[in-house]
Length: 123
Image (cartoon, rainbow, N blue to C red):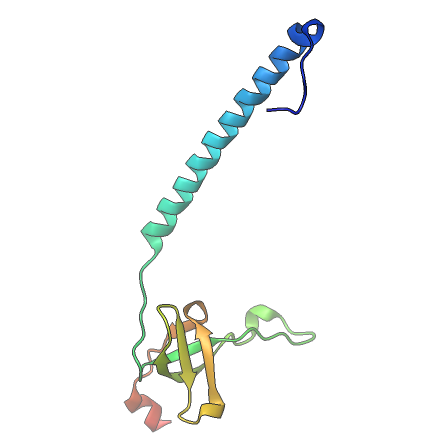
């Protein structure tokens, strides 16, 4: 494990340190794997797959920061925007029919809109 050559005179003194270091490394590896498995189980339990179809209304996350205003009180999601095209499992093109007004976004920054087409026309 260590880039260290052990002489016969130092062998008895160094051997316990090398053994303890190797045991500690193995224990750290085991604990890391256990923690990773625990995190994976927690994520899998809470995660649910989300998929959007072209035509769906979605809200888009856009971080906003303004001087002298608390971030927690600012709007974070803007929209609703219409899903124009699904580019991959996690990437969508949203926006208006005009290609200049479209954005390509990851699914992590998009939330499903509860607003229906009917309620959008009323406002």
